[in-house]
Image 1 (cartoon, rainbow, N blue to C red):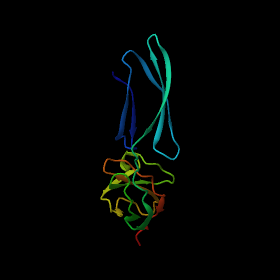
Image 2 (image 1 turned 30 degrees about the vertical axis):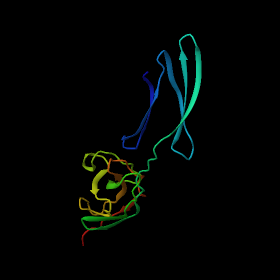
Image 3 (image 1 turned 135 degrees about the vertical axis):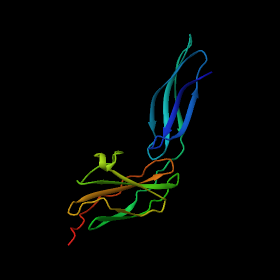
Image 4 (image 1 turned 90 degrees about the vertical axis):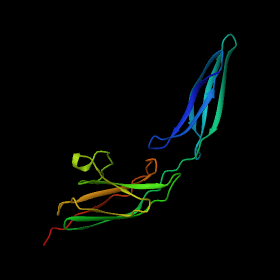
Length: 178
């Protein structure tokens, strides 16, 4: 008897959370036809069929209760304050989800509505820096030009890299020195 199909569940950083297989038939074919999530749960239903040589075909539906996974909560209260040559960011740290928070990823653009990219700011992307520590709540961006408006977003990452949602965007324009 082998495994004819396998149900896999990943977090948003592609870390495997669950691997559950269905032992198949020795003398026939088995196939998973569809998968559906039960609303409000982490359970799934798998529908499939078994076809046994010279015996016909049977249908089956199985319910699997998968391990619960929660990413870190979204950092809240993001604020930005500018002064000549520097922008200070501050936020309220995230609450751990299934795993501990390990860092915060800060994204910066010079236009509103930007989404995160893994490419560093100097290479045309939006990723600025990763700040380590579950309780980290501040960052000083000193690579800024006075008079230019900057837009920031921050998210929390857990110990295996799964991410929270992005905090609300904030903007600030550092003052021009007098």
